[in-house]
Image (cartoon, rainbow, N blue to C red; front, side, top):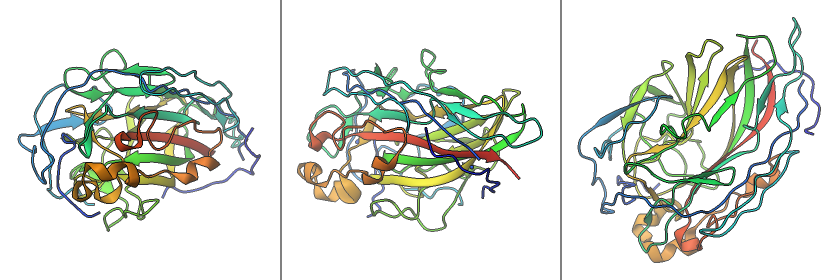
Amino acid sequence: MKRALSLLLVALPIVPFAGCSSDEGGPTYSAAGSGTVAGSSTSGGSDSPTSGSNQGGSTTMTAGTTGTSGSSNASGSGNGGSETSGGSSAMAGSGGSGTSGSGGSAMAGTGGGGDTPVSLGKLDGFLMQTPCKAGTSDDCDSNGWIYEGATHACSGGNLDTDAAATKTILDFPVTGGVKGKVYLAKMHFYGIMEPKIYGDSIMREATARPGQGNPADPAPFAWSKTAGASYPASDYNTYEIHVIDDQNKPYKDYYLNADTQQGHWTMVIDYERDLEVVAGGKIHIRSYDQNCRMIKNCGPSGHTQGATACAGQARTVTGVSAAMPAIAVMQPGLGVEANSSGQWFAIDVKTIAAKP
């Protein structure tokens, strides 16, 4: 169980190479673990690692909706918008299998006025991985995406967790509380992510671009100006959190890797933010990449250092050791050699409290 806290009322508040990943808050808790497996799957898409390349035509994506397949490329070097107590799991090497852990779910204390404990279920301890296929470049073909021990291959040349067969897998109901009431969930995000330009429909938290330290500071956190807003699709992976209200309508959209440039580098994600959630609604996680390739975990300057430096530059997110439940991720390679380290994304729900 997570430690008991008094109910809080809180308010929500690099080496920049333009390139292409086509080369490319009185709660108490318990929470679910998550399993992982570095399986094998096929993927498509390729491109050259040159700055600003493979950024041709444009495709528009709508936040929280099923991604459309397609091969058009967008973004590039252009400017962006203004800005555990639970189970643990084993992880196998490439092509192996793992077992998923089990446990309780994160819950908030009562907030008065008939509130009951609010839970986000297995979102506390969430882990999604996108391992690389082996290769000698500083980007790689994706080996699909992995959640709870199951590997989901790319389809139609895209990596899209919102594909028809998997669209509801990453839905997490907001249970308890007073239906329709807004709560603040303090979440800690961890991972390795490449940069993504989300365009003018989103608001970046920081004026400055994301830092390239360990962790990235300022953090690349952003949100949509209007719920359900669209963003430009490109060959760079998205990391999205969509809040759906009790009427099954878009309420808030958050993005974890927003930048104003894209290129062959990755960022260490290790930061905490308050997100608004709605009792009786759900949280929907999405990741999308239109060519099923990604930038390897080669640090802030993978492109200039070259592929042979990836093994020595692959970074580990040390802060994840504080997560409860434990996040069982095999860093840095995700079950394959360090020279082919891919990307991953995890969530530790810390507290939940009624919004003032």
